[in-house]
Image 1 (cartoon, one colour):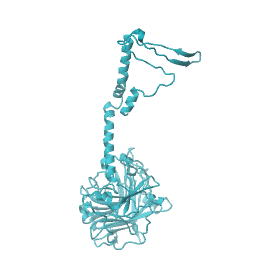
Image 2: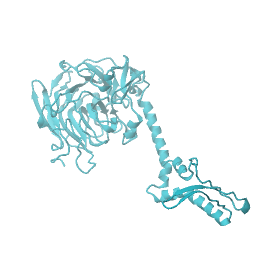
Image 3: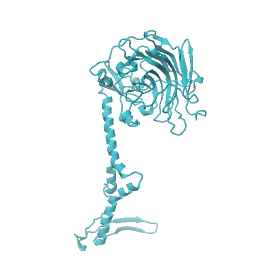
Image 4: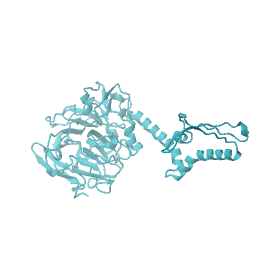
Length: 472
């Protein structure tokens, strides 16, 4: 309750209604009995037996006793809200200081929004409620970084040899493009961050970042569960895969379900470096349950560096037709049409930056090499697969789905998949995986099955429903 609400309780601000009684409170010390004003009230009372109308009542507060009583009642009425607050569940101090805390929080949010949202030259309204801002390329958030100030996006690099040209994907795979609008050349589309996006975050100061956690390849941590395929033991300079897109059910706002590639270097301690890209359903970050194209990076195991999409200075976008963080359309359906997106991440042999490509030839942008420590050179592991958050809010395993929400054994059209997985070697060649291993943290909840053939190369099916009879 605000201060204004409390005032309204003590001093009603409504005007008198017709027939109301008008009171005058008279000080006994300043008026004599004969000078007291009278108060008249017209009361109409209907009962089953009697009809009394137009009865006039007069009373005068002339005696010292009555006057004292009136003053006492006035004092009590003023103190009453305080008394009731003290007896209630919420102390007065909380009501007094909470508005100040809220104002401080909103000031932080507005300052952060000014940093994230850059002045657009054009604005596009997406059918899903997103607002897409077309921002001049060299004014995007990345160029707030001290090492990028005054720079402009780099020219396209040399692509890896052995690129499969059969993976043709239209740039019109996101809901916002269905309006027919597009961003002009020389600008990039950025999903506008709103106040409600930040208010949903568990921590305003860590908005746009993953939760700090110990990360290990061989087990779940802090409620995060995985079903992944991975390669390690060599030097990797990139990775490629086609990822089946679904809209899995996410049970709680503070949970998510994603499918992505991880390019990893460093130990699984505080020095972990990762570059990540894929799709995710995250009600907390986006406010809905659409699958959305996303990127992520960190150079210190998700502690103080890195963020999703363009929510901090880091990833430099070069494409004017793809909005990172925007909803993907279409999505796959059970026993129906299947849709996947092809992603390629590789290290530019000339400048050392890590580039992201969509489909066949659609460059999205790059992560500058100076953002990282270990990844300035190469990756030591590449991971593909799904991840969910299991918050166990009800005391049992979450029912948040991974992939399609069905187990790997159901196969094509029913279980989600990764296909045509490859890595980039030291000579900038795309090569098949030589030692793919698969791992599921909790196979009764989410599982994975790998394979290889001439059409899909290295592939696997993965996912699951979460809570079930075997996953209580």
